[in-house]
Image (cartoon, rainbow, N blue to C red; front, top):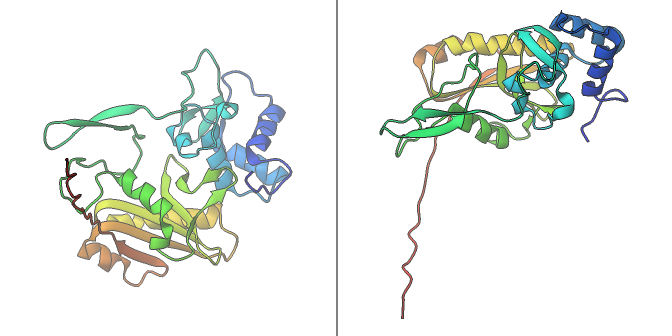
Length: 269
C-alpha cells in the first residue's frame, strides 16, 4: 500500500470533503475550493497533490488513465471546465473513462495503426509511426514510457515521483496541463522532464520553466531543489542558446540502435 501522510489516503479524504459539502446535483465547485479545504483540514498535503486527486476522481478526464490505481471507487466527479467540477451523475453523465479509446493514425506507406487517443491539450506530438530504420521513437508516448521505466539513463538514483497511488507519469500541473515525467533524485529533489520525440526548439524552455515553477509552488517544500530536463532527438542551436546560463536546466539527446542476429537454419534429416 502506498505511504500516506494521514491515517486515510487522500482519495478517501476527498470523499470526506464531498460528504461535508453536501453538494446538490449539478452544483459546481472550483478546484481552488478543494485546495483551500485541504489546506484548512489537512495542511500537510500539497495543492498539487489535491489537483492530481481531482483528476483521478473525474470520470470524464482521460488523464486519470495515467494513474494505474484508479478504479470504480474513484468515480466521484465530472469535470465541467479546466478547473471546475461537480458530482458525477450515474445514468445521466457518460460512462466513466476506465480505458483509453483507440484512434486510427495514418502512416507514410498508406497503412494505419491503432493508438490510444490523447487529450486535445496534450503537448505531445503524434508523428509518423512507420519510420523504417529510424533512429527515433515513432510516438512521444513511446519515449515517455521508456524513460519512465529507465530513469537511471538520465541520472543514477532518479526515480518516478510517487504521490500515494498517483505516479509522476503525466502528472497533472493545473489548467489541463501535464508534466511528461515528474521524478525525484537521490537527494530527494524534484526533476521535471519535458520530452520531444523529434527536434527541441527554444519555445520548449518556457514550457519547462512553467512546470518547474509550478512544482516549486504546489509540491516542493520551501527551499527544496527543483530541476528541469529536456530530452529530444536533436537540439536546435536556438534551444541550446536559450538554455545557456539558466540554472538547473539540463539538455539530453537520445539515440536508438537496433541490432539483429542471424539464426542458423535448421538442418533437416
